[in-house]
Image 1: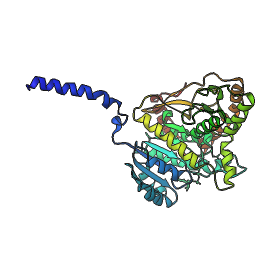
Image 2: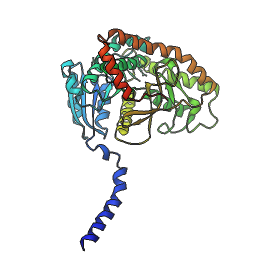
Image 3: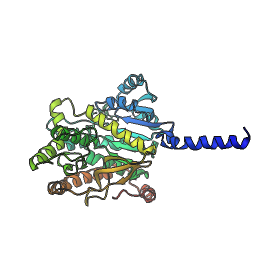
Image 4: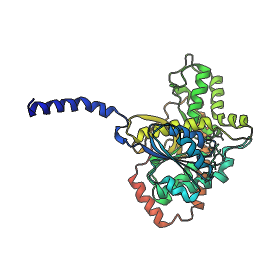
Amino acid sequence: MDNRSANRRVAKLAAHLQPQIRRDPTAAHKAGFTVAVLGAAGGIGQPLSLLLKRCPLVADLRLYDVVPLAAGVAADVSHVNSRADTRGFHGPSQLPLALEGCDLVVIPAGVPRKPGMTRDDLFNINAGIVRDLVAACAKTCPNAVLNVISNPVNSTVPIAAEVLKDAGVYDPRRLMGVTHLDVMRARTFVSRSKGGDPNTIDIPVVGGHAGVTILPLLSQTRPFPKGGFTAEEARALTHRIQNGGTEVVDAKAGAGSATLSMAAAAAEFAHSVLRGLNGERNVLEHAFVESRLVPGCAFFASKVRLGRVGVEKVLGLGKLSDAEAAGLKALTPELSASIRKGFDFARASIPALTSSSTANAGSRLAAAPGLGA
Ligand SMILES: NC(=O)C1=CN([C@@H]2O[C@H](COP(=O)(O)OP(=O)(O)OC[C@H]3O[C@@H](n4cnc5c(N)ncnc54)[C@H](O)[C@@H]3O)[C@@H](O)[C@H]2O)C=CC1
Ligand SMILES: O=C([O-])CC(=O)C(=O)O
C-alpha cells in the first residue's frame, strides 16, 4: 500500500471513530472529579459517602468531619471496589487538606431535627457551622460547586452566598441548596397513589425546603395521570410532600431525621452536577439557587439546567393551577423572611465585610452572569 492510500485509510478510520469519541460522556474529563463530603461521619454523611464512592465520575473522594470517625468511615468505604481514591480528614486543621482541588463539595454537616422542632429551630447551631465551612471552601477551593444540605436550607444557602461574596469568590452558578429529596418524595407519593413509574415520572417541586415553602406543581406531572387529581387528592398529596421530613422525624422518635433517603437524593443530585461539569448536555434537576423568578425571594427552588459551570439556566415555573398559584402567594412571605434571616446573620457575623473585600466581590460578580430566569 502506498503512503497516500495508507493516509486515506487512517483518515477514514479516524472519521469513523470520531463520533464515538464525542458520544463518550467521560471523554472530556477522563481523570474524574474530586469531591468532598463535609459531615461525612453523620447519618447522611456515611451512606452518602458510600454512594459517592460508587459514582463513576468520582476519582478522588475526601471524607471530612469534626469527629475522628471520619477516618474510620473512609477506611470502611475505601474497600468498595470502585475507582475513587478515598481518604478521611478530621478537625479544622485538616479541613484545607480535604478541600484542596475539589470540584464539588457536599455539605450535610450540622444537627438534625427532633420531633416538635421546625427546621428553623436548627438555625442557631447550623448557621455558624455552614458559615465556617463555606468560608474554608472560599479560601481553599473557590471554584468548587457547593451543594448545601444542612438545614434550614432556606437560610443556610443565603448565608453561604454572603460568605462567598465577602471572600470575593461568589458565582451564583456554583451554589445550590439540595431540595432533591422533595422531588423524590413527590415522585414516590404520586406514583403510589395515582400510578406511573416513580423512576421516570416528572413532578416539579419549587419554592424552598420547609413546610409550606415546598410547593409541588402536581398540575405539571408528566405523564399526567389518567383522570387527573381531584382537589382533595391534590391537597392531600401536597400536604404529604410538604411534611415528608416531619413524617420521618416523628417515625424516628428523637433519633434524627431522614438520612438514607437524603443520602440517595444527595448522591443522585451530585451525580447530575458532575454529569453537567463533565459536559453532558441538558441535565435537568431542581435546586434552591439564586433566582429572579419570584419577586422578594432572592433564592428559589425550581428546575435548573446543569452544565460545565454549574447552574447554566434557571427554568421558568410554567403554568400554575389556581391552587398552586395560591400556594406560591402563601409561601413567599415565609421564604423571603428565611432568606433575610440568613443574610442578616451572615452580614452581622462575618467579621470583615470590609470595603476592600466588597469591592473584590463586585468585580467577581460582574464577571459572573446572574441566574435570573
Ligand atoms: N436538605 C435536605 O433535604 C435535608 C437536610 N437535612 C439536614 O442535614 C443535616 C445533617 O443531618 P444528619 O446527617 O442526620 O445529622 P447527624 O447529626 O447524623 O450528622 C451530622 C454530622 O455533621 C458533623 N458536624 C457537625 N459540625 C461539623 C463541622 N463544623 N464540620 C464538619 N462536620 C460537622 C457531625 O459530627 C456529624 O457527623 C441536618 O441539618 C439536617 O436537618 C436532613 C435531611 C434532608
Ligand atoms: O425534616 C427534616 O428535618 C430533614 C429534612 O429536611 C427532610 O427530611 O426533608
